[in-house]
Length: 190
Image 1: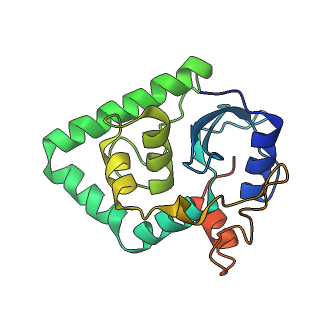
Image 2: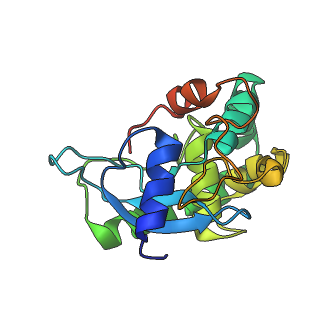
């Protein structure tokens, strides 16, 4: 985890199209150098519980993950959890890891993990963010979804910050304006 610099905060603001809330740290960086996952506080500044500790900020990655969700990956993963005890045990361990990391910041009594863990898959964005923040081998379904993604960073940075004009042609970077869709598809509110 890295303390966000002013340039990081500017990039995150541009990625989200609004100021970040509850920002604690940069949890992972895209190969382009911008943050793509942030660690958020378990409570938003107004005190509202926010159980999504690892929040995906890159709109290109979020859009690509939204495509995987639309193609039925969550349903397939949930079915596999019911049929494969080893996968279910590894996913439960990922859930425990997520809770331990969140609880190390602040305990949210009565609040479950995020993304549907430990029994189902509800949000690939959360699972991929956890996989990126924790590293390979911690969240098996996050790792699997991450491996299924295209290389979203290949076009360069998704946003331009600090005088960098290499990215930011639009939030999704593909000319479609998919930033709004990508942000909406995450279903959470860091």
